[in-house]
Every structure is written in structure tokens, then in C-alpha cells.
Length: 523
Ligand code: ADP
Image 1 (cartoon, rainbow, N blue to C red):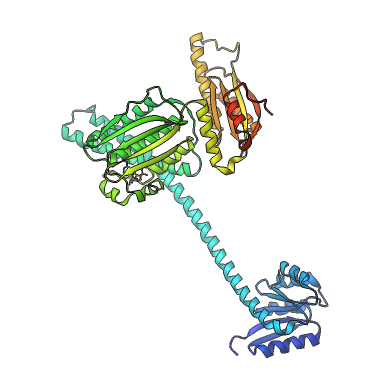
Image 2 (cartoon, helix red, strand yellow):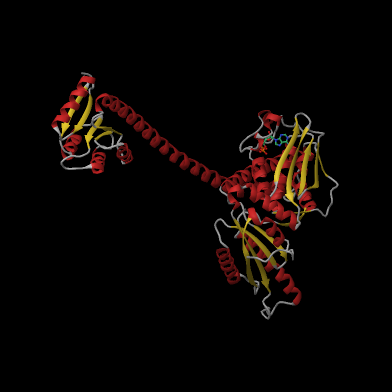
């Protein structure tokens, strides 16, 4: 007999036991049966031998009902248990729930017994394989997460360590180039320019790596304020101008309203535009043009960077916003290397700035990347903010409205402060308070500075409740006062206007945010 199936039969009634044994032997000669009359006896057998299946009566001299099942399961967790019962299906279902593999009603055993045993053993094998595969997968998953974490930390540390030496190389190269340490000839200047330009590439790549990591971990905060767009654009164009010139590409700022103001974190928008302009320069050949323009588009200002470069084939247009994605042909064309992170960072930054980033392109003709940023008008900011929150359906929950006012600390003027100094210092202190308030908010929240000394906070209730936020701000202000050398700070007055459901109360929230006198009284 080759590997006979080992069955443990637990039955105290010797007539029933003999009938079952005969039935099993008749149906399959490759079965070896061990007979036990009590659970204790069965447990002993289980200790000595591994069984393929256990068939057990429920009512035994030393155990009854579910207790029988649980004792057997404890002794043989790796074997299917088939229970013989005189009761109905309902009791059977309960037996299955308690861990039995199947049950048979006594009296109907004859035709079903062998089939039940076969199915139970097969089912059990499958379950065991599945459990094994699951535990292997879980183990692999854990090590993958650990590897990911380790590689992210490694990249973060290496990138961070790269920053200082790169800055030093850049600075010393500039000193040499400007002839500060002695005369340099044309050829040397050209070589140093290449050195500077490559160092800048490397710095940008390091910044990309660090930004991606921070964005991935949700560590990037937005300190949005009102900014004059033209100043920002001029600043970024200046950064890329020398490389554009070296590549024979002209960068032009369009004729847009110089008073256009956007609501954004200055540093984030500068980073987005730098990435777009650097790419435009990189993928435009000599004689080409790059135009930076801006126009109103609904609640947004649409800032576009249009180049007459190599363009992007339609099938790559979505792909390029993914991390580490580059158009294969382009890597051959471009002399400047990148990781394929710039656009994914630019898009993520546009999104957390309540805006978006889009592209249109024709292969061989050029591309236009457009970043949409809210106009610096209260109603526009509120609309963009609520739209963004509504798109993220999960955060439909509640929004709390809090007003904060800085009360100037009467009679606490420092002796050495002149009235003129006092005004300037007040301004600095209020700006620091502004930074302090923003530092306690997440990208789900919004802070509107309605006057130099007043703020309205929209707190999306996820982690913090108004009370907790107020406590945190007060604690930080106390620390700031304790460590500050610039005299007295104003006191902050908080007013919680209420808690609102974005879904139902959006209009009310908008009116309260705009200080509309017709807004209904708060709850
Ligand atoms: P990187 O520039 O480091 O490769 P990006 O994420 O900034 O990464 O860009 C991804 C890819 O998108 C680029 O490698 C290039 O193939 C394509 N791309 C981006 N901007 C332009 C552009 N202005 N013209 C043509 N292709 C572009």
C-alpha cells in the first residue's frame, strides 16, 4: 500500500465505529484507520502520528459538542476535522464556524462519507498552501517595505550631504570666473562656465531627489501669501537666462498685467516655473524661442511656458508626469541629464498650491506647459480651496472656522524702540506670527490673512480640532516670546466661529470667509 491515507476515527459506540470502519475500507483500500474512544485517547494518538483527516463523534465520554471540536483543533491544528452529529444543519453550521471542516448527520453517512473525506482533505491542502503562500508574501512585503525605507533614507542622506560641497564648488568656480583671484582668459572662462552649468544640473537633481522624498511623505507645507507674479517670473527667467543664451535660445516674458497677483507659496511657484523653464531650455535647439505668459482663467491665473522645441508625442503626454519617466528619444537628444522627476514634482506642488499643471504639445513643433494658480482674491482662493477639498471625496467631513486677531500689547514698548522702529518691529512680529500659524496647518487647511493682524483659518477636521490647534499656536507663541530678542509680541485672540459640513454649508462658509455681513449667524 503506497502512502495510505491516515484517518483517526473517534467514536465511543463500537457498533457505529465498526460500521464506519467497514464503510471506509470498502470504499478505499488505501486507508489506514486508527480508532480512539475518547478525546484524551485521540489526543495521545495525534501526538504520536500525523493524520490526514479526523472523523469524530460529538458526544464522547470525556467531551461534548463544541468542546470536542476545540480540543481536537488545539491538538491537531493542521488536520481537517469532520464531525458526526445526530443534530440538524443549524448545529452543523455552528460546528463549521467553530473550526470543524465539515459535518455529517449520522444515518446519512453511507454515501457521503468518502466524498466528504476526500473534499475535506483537498480543501485543507489548498488552505494550507494558501496560508503558506500568504505568509511568504507577507514576509517578502515586510522586507520590501524595509528595503524601500532604507533606500529612501539613503537617498535622502546622500542628497543632503551633496548639497554643501556642490554649493562650495559653485561659489569657488564663480570666484575664479569673475577674475577675483587673478586674470582668466576666454578659454578658461568658457571651461569654468561649463563647470558651473554642470554643477547647477547636479544641484537641481539633488533638489529633485529631496523634494520627491518630502512630497511622498507628505512633509511639504505651503505658506501661501499674496505675490506679484511679474516679480516671480522675472526672478526665474534670470536663473535660466545664461544657459538659454549659451544654447542660442531666446526667453521672452509676455506682455501681461504687471499688477497680476497670485495666492501661492513663493518658493513653490518659483520651483514649478524653474522646472518648466529648465525643461523648455533643455528641449529647444539653437534659434528657438521660449515665451512666458499669464492670463486670467476663471478663478486662476494661468501661467504658460511655451517653447518651440522638439515637442512630445501624444502617447507620452501623461507618462511624463510620472516619477522617473522620460521620453526615450529625448534622453538621446538632451545634453543635460535629469532623473525624470521635475514634472512630477511640479505637478504635485501645483496641486498642493490649490492649482494644477497641464500640457499641450505637438511633436516637432513645441510644447506649452501651463500652471494654474489661484488669483489673490478672497473669493477665488475660497472657491479653489473648496473645489479641491470636494474632489478629495474622503475629506468631505467638517471644516471649522477660526478667527485670529493680534492685539497690540499696549504700554509694553521696549525702552529703546522709537515709534518708527516700533512700527517696523510690529510688522516683523506679525509676519513671524503668520509663519507660526501656518506651520501648524496642513495642506488640507487654509489660512487667509484678512488684515496684517488678522487671520481666518479653515481647519479641515482630520487630526486637529480647533481647541488643539489653538493650544499648539499659543504654546509656540510662548516659546517664540521666550526666545525672541525683539521685545514684546502681541497677544492673540481666538474666536471659533463654528463647525460646518462642506457638503451642505459651502455657501455659508464662502460668505463667512469673505466677511459677508449677510452670512447667517454661526452655530
Ligand atoms: P527630466 O527633465 O529630469 O528628465 P522631467 O520630469 O522634468 O524630468 O521631464 C520628464 C520628461 O518629459 C523629460 O525627460 C522629457 O522627455 C519630457 N519633457 C519635459 N519637458 C519637455 C519639453 N518642454 N519639451 C519636450 N519634452 C519635455
